[in-house]
Length: 270
Image (cartoon, rainbow, N blue to C red):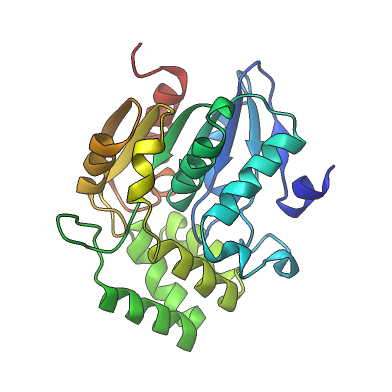
């Protein structure tokens, strides 16, 4: 196993000519895809990994400068593909990893046949003629809450993000992976995500994009998916699911897994 693979806990499973890379969002790790993976391994080579800063990674490897912008994560994705000698893949990204995969695809479009993304936002802050869902005051309060008592913040944030109560399995699962992050690293990751603005890059994203979105999502309003659809440089398609929450693959796998499989197997112009 190479250095990059080891650092990101890379797992390669399944068999097939096509490779699928599964990338998780903030506060989770590769276990986010546990409901999807069994449906892929018979037909695809599946690559799972953990973003640096996830609770499953070595915190000593987290470089606060490198990961102050999402480009640092995009370079990690490219490094993983290079170390595994992957020439082409379908990239399935959730939340921030949707943006990370998109950035990587701008640098190396030849490596990505398409992006299948869940809950993607290029900017979380509201702006003139743009609704991202948050005001700066909201984010300042979020960061302060993380700083002052991380565990208490996790307990409050998890049910809001997932869209369920603390008793639900999905909320407990997300709480677990959120708790596993080192608090200072979690704050750094959250700041890099929520303060980012990649709207200028959208026209440069030419890889086909399948945009999958929950009807109700605390972090990403439905209008953001439509904004992406109108501003991406390549072909795209939007599917809004009747799900509630930012992590529907955990909270509503019975709805989300069939949708993901359909978008993975079928191209936009098919």
